[in-house]
Image 1 (tube, one colour):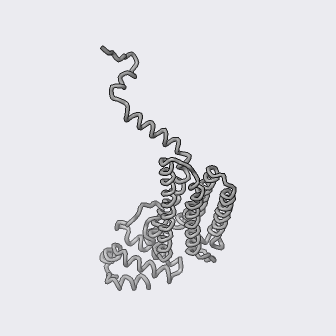
Image 2 (tube, one colour):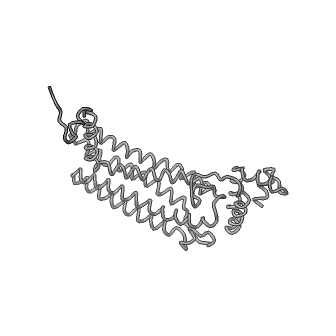
Image 3 (tube, rainbow, N blue to C red):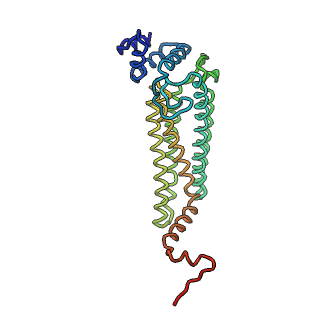
Length: 296
C-alpha cells in the first residue's frame, strides 16, 4: 500500500514501466516518503523485498552517493540488501572503538597535566577524572555491546529482539563527552596562572587551549547532528554528518594531547627553516668537494 499510494500521489504511471522509472527513480522526495512509510508500517522481510524491487527498477539511473562501497553514504533505499548486515556490523564495532579512542586521548592529556603540575590537590583531581573517564567508557562499552538481546539482532533485523533506545544512549554519551571536554579545558587554568612563563610560551599554551576549546565545539556540533539523525528514516545517508564530526572531535583531542611532546620537533623545524632562509646562494659552491673560494 505504501508504494502504490506514493506512486499514485506523485502522478506516476503504473501501466508504463519507462514512465514509472522516470517518475520514481529521480524523485528523492517521493522515495523518502515511501521509505518512511515502509519502515514504519511493514515487517522487515517486506522492507527487504521492496528495497530489492526498487533497486532493480532503478538500476539504470545514477545513485546519489557521498562515497561508499558497502552502502554508508547512500540513501537507505539504494543500499544493497546483501551489504546491509555487514554495514551494521562495522558500525557496531566502530561505535565501541570510538569510545576507547576518546578515552586514550583524554587520559593522555590528563597524564600530561600531572607531569607539568605537581600540586597535590591537582593530582587528586586528575586521578578522579581518570577514574571517571575509565568507568564511563567501560559502562558505555557494555551498553553499546549488549544494546540488543540477542546481540545479533543489532545487525540482523530478521531476528525479533529486545533493544535499548539507541538515541538515548547517543544523547547520554554526547552530553557526558561535552562535560568531559569542558573539564579538561578548565582543569589546568588555576595552575597555569601561577606559572612564570614568557609571552611566546603563553601564546603556545593559548593555541593549545584554543584547539581544546574547538574539540568542545565539535562535540556540540556532533550532538546537533545526532539529534537530527534520531528523527531520520534515511539512516545510511543522514548519519554521514554525525560520523564526520565524531572523527573531527576525536582528531582534535588526539592532536591537542600530542602537541606538547612534539614541541622540540617543531623547534628544530623552525630553526631549519630559518637557516635555509638566511643561507646565501653563493654559499652552496663552497660545499662542493674540490672547490675553493678565491679572493683577490
